[in-house]
Length: 259
Image 1 (cartoon, rainbow, N blue to C red):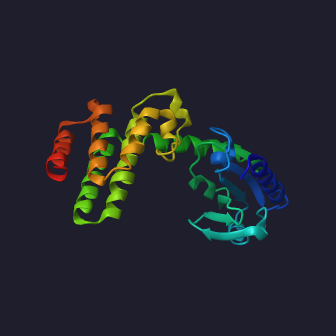
Image 2: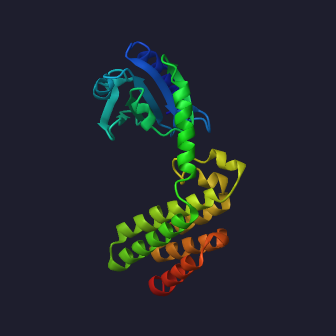
Image 3: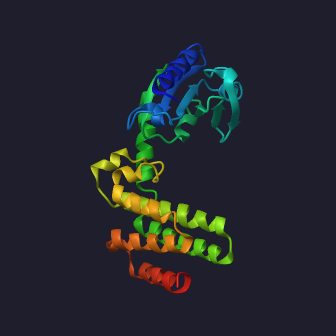
């Protein structure tokens, strides 16, 4: 979706929701917040709708309040509060409907308040602060390293058993996420501000271009080789964080699983 059409959709959404007395807030998140980066043609619309208690179900089930409602192809409720909607022009929107109390279940990093009829800004700031604390202390280094190691063990084991698809998931997704979290946690860079603290994979290569290119390249390789190179990155980038028992575990992987 071109930027002018993206902005028009945002304006139409706000205008339509302002017509509902039950709606007390509209909060743009993700690209729609325009805080860390501007939306582009690949951006979806991410937002929270805050309604008076008792009206959540109505706004989750009756989507006529959405712009271009007649052009919706797919819509489904993905979580207790969140939905996805796909339009016939290829545009995707993701949103959640909360009342004031349910809003505290959300996680927020960047946001932009478009409608505020109930002084929600102070609550949004509290939620953002809580999210920052939670994501900055997801796990300590020791736990992340041991999760990384055991994800590789499971993945390589499944590869050797012939369960290739599952092996890809453990090595190239689960283990990779732990490694990226470790790198991001242990590098105090101002550029980390553009990273997404809700998803360690997003925009990693913008902050660490050389390392990002190296990781993108290894993800194209067979699973054992990818696992070996992920281990090498851990030992090269974070040698001081690896404890003796973890180093022994890494050696076992090389000797037993990657020989």
